[in-house]
Image (cartoon, rainbow, N blue to C red):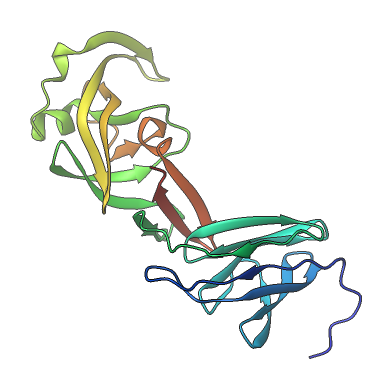
Length: 214
């Protein structure tokens, strides 16, 4: 395949030699809008945004640079920038979530070790659940700090509580702030930013990846 008039060129060489690291070399030789021409080991591949080959995923690309992910580690490169050296394979846990037919991201998790189903909600300040959910998993939420929230239909009682832990997959965060709303709504617990702030999130195609920061 002949590629003409690339917007710019940059180079990335990653060498990995020791146990626990992966041996891969990536060279970005052409940049286009949402596409990049990569040399991955000995093969040249034109990847579109979200596509993967040989453990390398193109997150985004433009005339100014590219963002690639190598086995979960993201590298952002500007014009003519390069990185060379040993690259250790990350041991932090990653959860992959696929959308339902409505484009919503649900994942099974645990609160204080008890199973619960979460809806990932980056617009929610806190992990949020209904009073019915809290009671079911053994949280005495009425010992929390009470306040009120106004909805289109009514004014509802809300309690601020501290959860011992929240986890999804192998990602576990202790001492998470949460909100409990009196009644049976929301139908699914919301995985809000009091948990998500301890993670890194990215979308590859329609797949959401959540990785623990620390």
